[in-house]
Figure (spheres, helix red, strand yellow):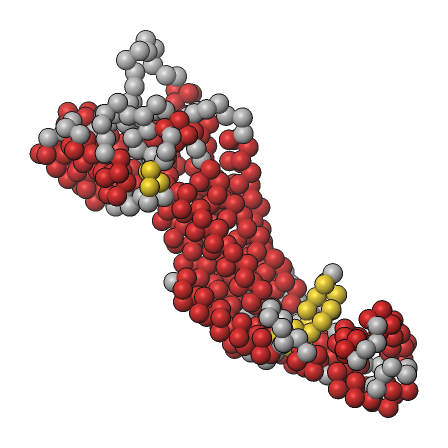
Length: 459
Ligand code: ARG
């Protein structure tokens, strides 16, 4: 079926029909399309286009269509141009000629925007819930190993000791920002375009406010031309999805490294790893690699729509139909990746003794010493030089930091005192970092509690 045709003398070519159809993918908008159309029927009734009885019949027929949609053969053999055409044809099968009135004063340009907004609004809420689940898993893992000390890295070289929950809370912050971005995206998504017509506003006196309330939209789009042209709200979501994937990918990369033989202080569960078809000893971190890998697809979805929108003439152009696959794919991948990451985190086991060995074998306490000297009045430049020389000497002699005695330290340079040897213990350095946002044990315990409170607010 087609929703147009009067002014054409020839039928569309088969090649064109196949090329331009969207039903094969926009069928995911079915429920949104039906809900939007039911609300539209009520708006038409209020505008005096449909009688109460006609409206009732249409709304009921739509309800039956949704019930029928659960059957696997629902779309079988359908060759309609898009989901909007399909739904109206289905309405015709149930409501006869009355179906011809449903599209009064409405354009598919606003309809598709409405459907996308309704569909996306739900995906945003689901994604936010999945993010909260993941943040909860991070906090849970942090609580499980509340005083585990691990190396913190810069340039992938051991830099300073940090508490494991401090590391995990870094990701908590990233996902908290992602949550904010989704909230913003939702605010701009949750506006009603219906009433905009094709581009100039509907010629039927539709009560847009009532329609918005009925569909749960927080407000109205303010300009009919903008409403027909706008896909910013989709890009907003895609950008949020890109950053979620980017954060997940960095986490995945860390954990792939930390669980490797070379680092060896994190153990991924058998349940989220896989073996090699040839090498019997292998246990590969495929779940994390796939999270990292799927990033490419989500980034691609963002740039795909970004490029599609660039330079499009105002208002609707058929190019806009190309918004759907990127959106659907990004939403699917980001949700699947969030679910996967949570299972990886919940099942991973930290080996605090191995992590501590890595800490103690390196000179992560060097900064602690230099800052202690600075607190005692030595210029930082001098302190830095001095501790640098101590490290060099230590490396020459193959001596671990903890192997220096107080007397040896004091003998090394006039500024160094025997008491400073206490700082060769990484935990002592951690205790000097009790600053908001720092890795001091008290600061981290407070941050964990604050994270739990923030999570409760997010839910
Ligand atoms: N399938 C179309 C889309 O996704 C629906 C809108 C079609 N509108 C039109 N004027 N051809 O954008």
